[in-house]
Image (cartoon, rainbow, N blue to C red; front, side, top):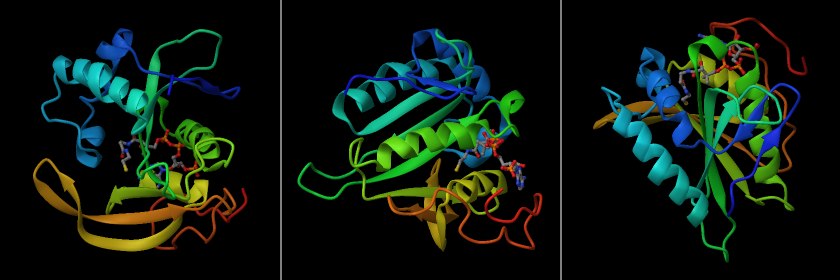
Length: 205
Ligand SMILES: CC(C)(COP(=O)(O)OP(=O)(O)OC[C@H]1O[C@@H](n2cnc3c(N)ncnc32)[C@H](O)[C@@H]1OP(=O)(O)O)[C@@H](O)C(=O)NCCC(=O)NCCS
């Protein structure tokens, strides 16, 4: 599939290119990205080059993973402020499934932009006229409350904790897993856990 743009008045999602390599390499120096994702550590410029040149390009060409750079809104591609990716698993004859992943640059966090960008991707992914997936999963290492909050806002149903489910740089970590179906409302489906960090917000902000 050819990469395409998704946009709202707050974000523009377009394919990351070689022009983004330095910004990606800089963003992946952030300790939170290292802590909660599978990026190589230490993260070098060559990692960003192969991410753009291989992972992103092959993913779009084969339809195995769709990756967007999150940018400020506008007619042209501005500086990258985050990344959203969606895997696409299954053959054309099967009901297909995907997994959502994301990170944002530290300066761009806390403004709802990850949630908004992810919602754009999910709306396309779960639309029968779009990608038509049967289910999208979200997986985060236990303790990643910022990620869980995004998934919660988007309407993912928390399925539970899978022990040692996530392989990170050779080490298996316990992971929270959530799912979102096409028919699910795209809003919180349960109260935010009372013992969790973060503001107490009732469903349907
Ligand atoms: C997860 C991440 C992408 C969220 O990005 P973001 O731009 O801050 O996301 P949003 O602003 O859309 O939403 C974040 C929500 O989490 C909340 N939040 C942030 N940190 C939190 C924390 N430690 N505990 C609880 N809630 C937290 C915010 O208040 C916000 O809640 P709101 O919707 O009520 O306003 C970002 O923190 C990040 O890049 N982390 C490092 C990489 C990572 O963890 N990726 C996900 C791997 S599964």
